Image (tube, rainbow, N blue to C red; front, top):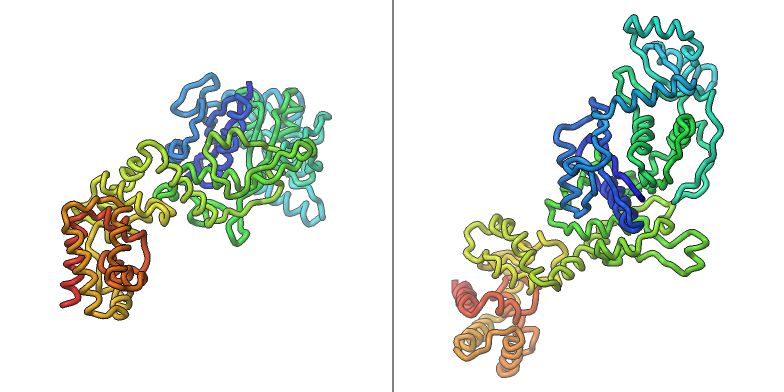
Length: 505
């Protein structure tokens, strides 16, 4: 069976780059009819952040990426924490020792630092002089019995021959052994494995068929392939995902601020839009001959797609080699359209109203107009202007509280409107709204406004500006007919009377 894994370290909150890696694993697994697991790579206790695993799981759940097995979801490959799999790593490191592909090193950190400096002065590219490689078995056993600390190193002078499989994204890669440290450490003195040994062992033991991970692991690929060959194991297929960049071209990282997934949840972005945005970052035109000949094209970078649509369209051959910039303006466009998609579904607007209600109540704590049903009406009125659900209190404050006629914007509008005309327009519309047989629908209200400015022999712009000031105190907004409809008859009449009083005052 096709089986993929997302294997974050619990060193902090899940960030956008990690979420995209999880998403691509999810899409590829579902595309191929396979499964994917969540594995926690927690072998570096010094960097583990308490609560990080719960945060990662919460972010994946919010995004809608359900893994098939992992923490909190039992499966055939448990345990899913590397710290609970130490015996397995010890067993494999012993196999490497016995075959001569690894050896114990007893050099202290100070000795290693001195050695690196000496080699660098000599102009050598080596990072270690292999001082412990030729220790006899008796000497190694004696020092182990004496309690001396040691690490287990790869013996890069005894590597088996192997092939170099093509990367599913980058294709054929040049041999990068020269970039590796000399005889890399596989098992540390605290008996915890390095990432290199643990990931190779776990991917084999769990039956991982495809490894989709970040481009930053490309330099380590030769070492991982050497480990597979030294252990006589078949490696999975690898695909390395180009990095995501900020608008200024810098690498996105946890240390550079606002890239945490849950920050986007708190700011009101739609999870479907975030996934859509991340999926299309680097999902460019197909670059394989087969894909080009079949005229298959990847979606445009602002194509609005559901998760199911992404699964159907996803193709690793369409992932570009280039690093991709995450453009916030594209997220705004995609998010706005996902909101509109939600509103077009049964109960979609109600779901959105229920989600944003707490923010509305917090923004307007004394307003009695914060029911889910009323917020639904407001969302329907301002939907064309709303990019983010959290925009609602800012865009539509006059639906929940009385407009502030003392703002600079309101005063500027008012100063351009003749007093007598203002009073006449406001009083006339109030009288019309008092008529009991008026059908309270936006279309009927729009017809009423049209008839009135013609009857009063006024230009439409002047008439509408007066009423927009009276109802909202703002220059722009939804159509006046929709605003009046949402406010309701009684509140609309009261607001016109308030506007008239404010003029007198």
